[in-house]
Image 1 (cartoon, rainbow, N blue to C red):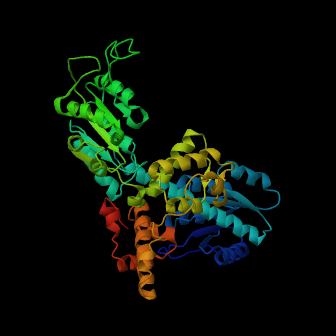
Image 2: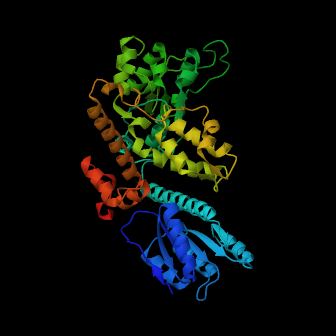
Length: 487
């Protein structure tokens, strides 16, 4: 009797375990799966042998007969679920055991195969199982990675660009320094402002946010500084301005570049003297307010054009926090994608919605010109509008119809235009280097510097991946906070 056939533990190919007490069945399945599914196979002649092999190997899929003498398929299924619920289990059943096979589905099996087999059907089932296990394990790894991060609330990522911004936020948060938050639209400037407030000693009071472009000049002035009864036509009562409302707290001037010059002068007085003068009053009122300002515009250019006061700029620009675009933090995109899928699947009761690896890869490669906001809204739309139980590539055309269609490239046609005058072989070498460097950095970032897991995910042998890393001078420890955890 065949007891087991093992494989080398160092391999990074997917592994399928076959469990059956019939030697001919083991041989047939091993031949078909090895040939058609591009994976390794370990076989066991009984449930107990399979159970012992679980400790030695970490199979992606287990295919088990349901009727065996020592430990039947249902018992083995239960043990596998306890050991590693990400392993996809397929139960094989003969005539008369269909009810048991249905029971196995209720207890967590992915599928069952009825003897005699159709070989093409076996291959489809195994490939589906391999894909499912990859999704579950990748999902688990990303959850574990996210759980190790401890940035201010509202931020996901640990790339260099975001880390620099968060480090500065953390260092200046518990001070009264005026902070200018700069960055493109959708980069999280308001989230940064909330983080500055929530980490400060003013956090017990509500932060006041002023959307500067949304208010006409005369309305903005009265909203900011307040007014007395009779100060102008229609002022039938006294109004407390937003600066007074923010007394003892924080005020955010969102898109400060759009404030008219006339109001900029009064704002400068608030920053210099810490006092305001409501419309219709001769006296000033002292205020204790920390001022934060945000903008996505070029303030220096507006100063040169006479549209923004230079002295106000220097008063606002005590500390500058620049929020990075997604172009500058591509290594964090897989974490953001995972974070938003988990958030919206939970929010909209779609926890069972699956997303194919092709879709995840496509989302990771898109040009998100709207930055994190566009990415977040796109994933929200995918979760809300997906009709089936799994999101596949054909679904994205409708789900992302309002987003950029092209994948992420440099604005100069993927970075090629600077190479058109370069000899072909030299240009090809540079493009390969650019691709390889970005690919490996993103891959190792997702797997926290774990070379073994990264190699398995990208389909390379571990030694092959290490050779490429050495060629491009990429070191795994750069992507892992604790070097002792490296494999």
